[in-house]
Amino acid sequence: MPHSLSLWSFTFLLFFLTFFFLPIPTLQTTLISPVSKDKSTNLFTLSAYLKTPLQPTKLFLDLAFLFPWTLCDSKYKSSSYRYVDCDLTFCYYLGFGGPQCSNCTEAGLPDPNCIIENRICGAYPENSVTRVLDFDAALIDTLALPGADVSTKNRLVSLSNYTFSCAHPSLLNGLPKGVTGLASLSRYNLSIPNQISSALSVPNTFAVCFPGSSKSTGVAFFGSRGPYHAFSQNSKIDLSKSLIYTPLLVNPDGYGDTVLSYSGNPPSYEYFINLTSIRINGQNVPINASLLDFRSEGFFHGIGGTKFSSNTPYGHLESSIYKAFTKLFVKEAASSRFNLTASSPAKPFSVCYAAKSVKVTRLGPVVPTIDLELGGKKGVVWRIVGANSMVRVKNKKSKLDLWCLGFVDNGVSGVNNKTSIVIGAKQLEENLMQFDVESNKLGFTSLLNSSLKCDHFNVTDFAKN
Ligand SMILES: *[C@@H]1O[C@H](CO)[C@@H](O)[C@H](O)[C@H]1NC(C)=O
Ligand SMILES: *[C@@H]1O[C@H](CO)[C@@H](O)[C@H](O)[C@H]1NC(C)=O
Ligand SMILES: *[C@@H]1O[C@H](CO)[C@@H](O)[C@H](O)[C@H]1NC(C)=O
Ligand SMILES: *[C@@H]1O[C@H](CO)[C@@H](O)[C@H](O)[C@H]1NC(C)=O
Ligand SMILES: *[C@@H]1O[C@H](CO)[C@@H](O)[C@H](O)[C@H]1NC(C)=O
Ligand SMILES: *[C@@H]1O[C@H](CO)[C@@H](O)[C@H](O)[C@H]1NC(C)=O
Ligand SMILES: *[C@@H]1O[C@H](CO)[C@@H](O)[C@H](O)[C@H]1NC(C)=O
Ligand SMILES: *[C@@H]1O[C@H](CO)[C@@H](O)[C@H](O)[C@H]1NC(C)=O
Ligand SMILES: *[C@@H]1O[C@H](CO)[C@@H](O)[C@H](O)[C@H]1NC(C)=O
Image (tube, rainbow, N blue to C red; front, side, top):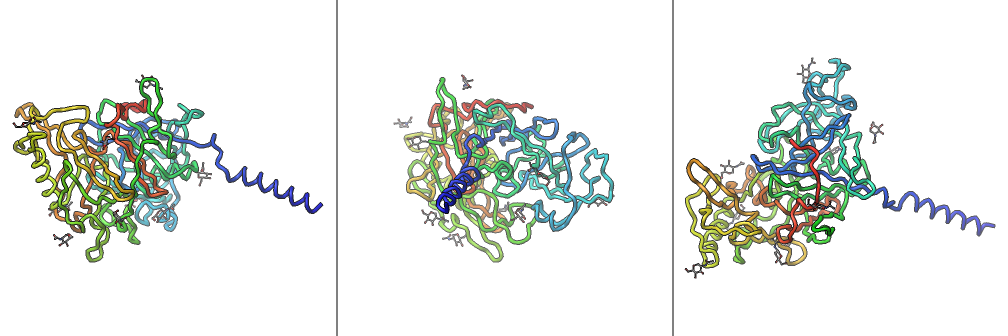
């Protein structure tokens, strides 16, 4: 009898374990969101549904700022929004900046239940492009995105406890036209990928394919490491299988990333990689190696290094790197492989070529390739071809038509010019990038090399302006 009892217990335990701890595949959810390029700012937007009833909207896609925010004005119409009651400890714990409470009149929402005595959690949203800071209310409402899996295809998956900051209309200045807020894809616990991960118990991983044209549509996948299906001539290609990987680094000091200083010396919530050298047309750019690592100056740590940024249209290089980089680029472009003679520059760029002298292929302008050598498994290279390095500068009035090297001088390395190498939006175009925050890994693949584009994920933008 004891024997059969223990067998029964064992069976029960097995059943219990299976039921509660094994992942049930049919419940796995990948969310997809259309990603577009804004023509006038050259920055990207992400489409989502917000509020009740669900309303499609575009948000500025930002890899840097900590948490998402949305315009809350008298036109904010939703039957599901709610404030967070003010409790200083809890407001602080939420992570929206300072331990400060607000009142509901402050938020500007047409709330019939708003009485001045109702104190609510405040928040400090920022515009990461203009670096403007605002103070408003923290809010909870619904966010929904289409599911990517066969079982959920075209069905919206919603997060009823999507937590974000309100913002005043002026905070939208400088962002792509038509956006109603900022979609944070940072490492922070309030970012959209983090909130999706906690709400749906899916991996804290997302992938983005940044479109190279404002006429095409890219995609963001949330909550899964793949498959990421692109469609080409009736075949289905899983691009998660083409990714190559490099470690993501955590910059130990987030000072200066935000206008507001966060107490407790938090780390940076941006995405850094271990760039070890740069080659142009196979030739090494001479770089002071200490600029590539994180270093300290007085109280400040985390100066130096290399990060991705989607809030600046072009790359930024520390002054000494910029000089060496442009010098070698000009030299290699002048070689008999390209025969390019630099023309007079056009601000903010310093290296430009007359468009008529530059050949253009599927990989963009034919110019020297730039290879970023990354740490990790030997031989991991992020290759930048003409399509990701050159910017067309055209002015009908002055009959200007140039291709310019899309990097700008970021000044001398220091507390105010923290990051030595910033890879900007131009460099991200037509690349599929997977940010695996849980494993601190970046997977990437350039679509320029294949016959595919970000457009081939066949995502329909439901929030067209
Ligand atoms: C989010 O992270 C911040 C900074 O580490 C922390 O202060 C805050 O309590 C966290 N919030 C939650 C809800 O875990
Ligand atoms: C609402 O909050 C703001 C900022 O905290 C404060 O300046 C203002 O006086 C408050 N309004 C009322 C009516 O309490
Ligand atoms: C949302 O938050 C409320 C209040 O904290 C909680 O009662 C509810 O269960 C949450 N809903 C989901 C779907 O997590
Ligand atoms: C390299 O950069 C570091 C940090 O800015 C600086 O302290 C050092 O003097 C530089 N070395 C050379 C040889 O320029
Ligand atoms: C560049 O010019 C040299 C000398 O005129 C010529 O031999 C070479 O073929 C040219 N290269 C290209 C890519 O046109
Ligand atoms: C960066 O890569 C180099 C070369 O692989 C390695 O020596 C170094 O430890 C790496 N740095 C970090 C911070 O991982
Ligand atoms: C970077 O440094 C230069 C001086 O080298 C300075 O003029 C510039 O304002 C700095 N940029 C920032 C963002 O602080
Ligand atoms: C394209 O593919 C070739 C060969 O596989 C590779 O060497 C090159 O780095 C790739 N270029 C880009 C832009 O990824
Ligand atoms: C994807 O889009 C292309 C071009 O619009 C179309 O030819 C193809 O049938 C679509 N494939 C799927 C599976 O939707």
